[in-house]
Length: 304
Image 1 (spheres, rainbow, N blue to C red):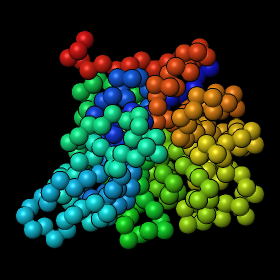
Image 2 (cartoon, helix red, strand yellow):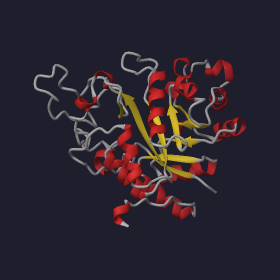
Image 3 (tube, rainbow, N blue to C red):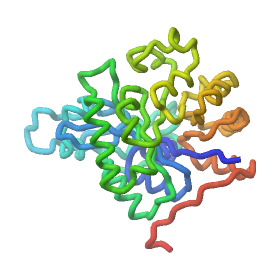
């Protein structure tokens, strides 16, 4: 039985999310795939960020890129309104504030001074690690209900595809999005396309169709209709009915974000093809206990 471990935003529970240190740590732990989030800056650079505005939780201002920059402070501003040099001033290596009720602040090792990387930098890191056996899952951050802070989905998709092609990683990268416009655009450009879905996005604005009326509540059939090759639902949506729907539609199900090994074990029993997790270390322990094939850790070549 093959079930995959996918590192969420690298390994968010262990290292700062969507950062080079986080990606390197995840490679060295050993995962089948790394998931990351990409948005477009004001100067058309592909940067790693989960939020369309600079997050006050994962980012801190360190100073303006130039004296008197009227856009400063940058925290809270739309990513789309800031250039890469402005975004690179942010410290994204420490969660703020480090509250006791923030589970990631408790378990995550800070990396002060980490900067927001570009997609190209991550691809360069994976090449330096010779991590050709680890697939990349790139979520395109695009919100059809917030066009004021979202990039044009056609431009964003085409820029991501071009960057992957430039680094020779297009064939083993999946494109992911809650905004199913992206999946339609990517249909003839990328072989693997994940239809992300949660309760909040089961709406025509996100799907581009009336899911309930057209498909009778069958999420998998809706995803297959727009050319998705994988269904990727929020864990709270996954039950035997959804898995039956996915099987009928011919779509593997990769579920997110699962951090409890007991829940992961239940989902494996339902037949999921992969588990997206903030804690790949926990899942590796579970995989070993169940006798499931484990992905090999990737060591930096200089250390071999």
